[in-house]
Length: 198
Image (cartoon, rainbow, N blue to C red; front, side, top):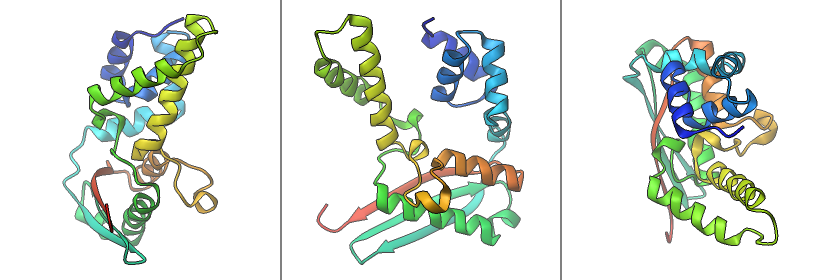
């Protein structure tokens, strides 16, 4: 069953979960919205999304410099100054800055990717598809490669560069973990990465 953009939008409005999480949940549930909501709940996305409605106006700006050649500034927000001052929250922000230095993401979330850039990448990948395959197979291959491209370019989709320490978890999973532990909405607001010669 193919999932439409309207289905994804409707589920996103109902749960507050991210666009791609909603799409994956709908695909897993064969288009059944109620089953998709259950899938999101099981994965903790719906709970984190409810927290996402609360304003995160406190937080920290953290820096990380690697070998005097790469520098990163990251803003991570939470709801209260109390949480922002905890060692665990500061360590999370530093972990994110270190990751940005190593992985060089371009955007924080998939929602930040300009639609024209996403379409341009989809076009390039579609032209690279194996034309000897049926059109539906070509489309699936293109979408799979687009997913890989997003995972390499979007911070929240990336696995943390310290795979041993974080057991291959994505930045979004780590963000959800600290949000669950603190009981607050935790948001990676923005980052800037500087590299000598770039």
